[in-house]
Every structure is written in structure tokens, then in C-alpha cells.
Image (cartoon, rainbow, N blue to C red; front, side, top):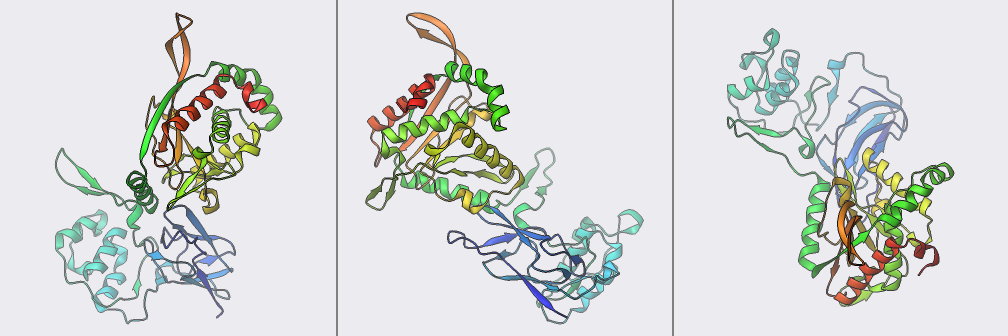
Length: 415
């Protein structure tokens, strides 16, 4: 037997630990080299753990839902082994301690218990002989186990033989715990690591920054006309659609160049002025909000920016955003208009000092030269840290963005 250890990938310095999601392989099953065995959720991203060797899964050391740290051994692969024939022979080893009789008895009868019931039987030290089954063909259900009452759980860890479908649930993504309250039901669902981290950073931002927000309105007609005129040629030439976000990124960079303090950050009693423009774009994902970074945005073309935004959107949808994608950033843009928001006050993403909120563009009545006309208007909101950014810089910075969007040709001449 040649054993190969499966370890947690090296996490970044800012990530202390992660949580194992569902194992894709069970002990006794064949494993191909580089096949994804399990995913690890951190407070920033979800990492995939590939198999370092081909063979047979010999042992799972850490179960679904458990916390792990960098380089920790979570499983072992027998690189010379062969897959077991009977799935009921699969054994998930959690300790070298001898199996307790109650747990062993329960496992031996797991074929007449539903998966959730089999797990609960083992936890409560019961067997199927102790519970009357009300399920199909006399199967024991989870409700049957709960109704039978709990016995003292076995104190020492045991090696439990279980059917392949029985797995320890993941607390962060477990099915909601429903409470029977008649016509007023409730569900209690634990936060994922990502959601908890977002909550922590939002509270940190509000507690440490002196946040103010300034607003302005933008006539988006010039941008919309330019986009309509060049959309077809742009997509044919670059293989990506011309969206509005690239205009907002370019307009933001123009303002940051003119008022560098908007691109700065606070470090103790120092103000750090960044000589580069790394723009964070807030993107929604199935697991929560993430802010990947468009690096050196001032050096990128409209096509480069649109490609990066499309790439981030796809990665977020598939849960493939990497730690490197999220690291850094000197200024952020949040587009609530995607969901129909008319106005908001975005929260600064620490350690940055300002963030631009973009909203839905709607036809509105405005006054031009004494006449009421209809224009496609977008309300912009910029939140800023008043500790280092005065109202003057914030207001003029937002005006610069407004001017760039209402006359996009300014962006070509950097004026």
C-alpha cells in the first residue's frame, strides 16, 4: 500500500481557516489524478482541492463541515489500491478508537433507515431495533428517531460504517431548520463564511470611517448614443459587448487622477496615496457579494475592461473567483442599477476611502435652457471617508465623473 496525503492548499495570510464543503469521493472509491475531491469555503473564496495522485480513497480524515487550516491533512489516497466491490463496505475513518456496540448495531441495519435517520441513530446511540419505522416498507425516518427520544450519545469517537449516501451535514450550507409554528413558520440558517466576513467588513467600515455621501445626476444620452453607434462593430472586433460599466470605470479613473485623495487610503495617522488605479467592481455571486479588482484600469482600453468584467461575472457565477482576484483595490464601483435601484448610499470597502454607487438609468423630466425635456438620467452617489477627503474634493470628483459621462470624448483626450 502506497499512501498519498491530501492536504489543504496554502491559504493567504488574511485567511486563517476554511470549511470543508461536500466530499465528492468516499472511502473505497476510485480517484483520478487532479480530480476535484472537495471544495473549501473561506471567508473570501471557495477553493477546489484536486487529487494529488490516482488510486483509491483510503481515508477521509476531516468530514464535511469541519474547519481546516493550511497544509492540514484531510484525506489519504492509496495509490496502489483497487476500488471496493460492495458500497456497504465503505468505512469513513474518524479515529482509531474501537467502535461502540450501539453504533455498530445501528450501522448494520442502516439498510432499513433513511440516510438522515441512520445518521441520527448513530448520534443518539440507537439502533433500528429501538425505533418503529413508519416510512415506506417499514423504513425508519428522521421523524421516527426524534419521536423515539434520545439516549446518551457515545462519548468516545467511533469508526462508523455507513451507506454511501450518509454524510455529515455542512453547517454553513445545511438545509434550514424549520420550526412548526402553524401558519407562521421560521427557518434558522447559519451564515456562510463569506457572508459572515462581508458582515464583519461592513461593520468595520461604518465603525472606523467617517462616511458621508454626495450625489449628482448624469444625462446618459451621450453614452447611450455612442454605445448604440459602435456596439455592433465593437463586439465584432473584440468579441465582447460594449456595456456601460467601462464608461463608469474610465470616468472614475479620470476623477481619481484629478483628485488623488479619492484614490488614497488611511494607514494609522498616515495617508497613503496610490500611484496606480486598481478598481474594484462589486459582483453578486450565489454565495454573496465579492469585489474583484480591475488592475491598472488607467492603462486598459474599453475592450480590456469589458473583458475583465465579463470574466469576473462568469467566475462569480461558477464560484471560481480566486484570492488574487480579490486582493488589493484603491477605489470601488457598485452597480445597484442592475437590480433596478434608483438611489443608494454605498458603504466604503476598507481600506479604501471612497466608493461610487451607480443606479438604474430612467427617463426623467429635467430642465434645460428653461425648457422641461425628457432625458435618460442616472443618479450617482459617492460615499467618502471625511477623515481625509473634504467635501470639496468629493463633490468636484463626482462632477468630473458627470462631465466625462455627459461628454465621453473627454475620455479620449484625458480632459
